[in-house]
Length: 79
Image (spheres, rainbow, N blue to C red):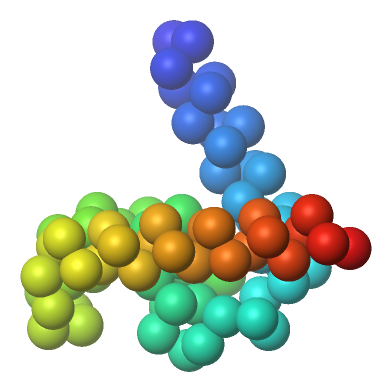
């Protein structure tokens, strides 16, 4: 149960930062973040599901997700 609360908090934090700074991400990065966390009109998707849809490897999707979150955090800290 504690792990679920931590995940919800992390997703909420990403959502807050994302909604303020989504314009720093390109369209592919936005789509991956939105699908992974279930933002906007998307339901939550696994890395594997996203990879299949975007015709790339699961590992590449994970790397883009990680880099996108790093980019969002960096922009958020400079504001």
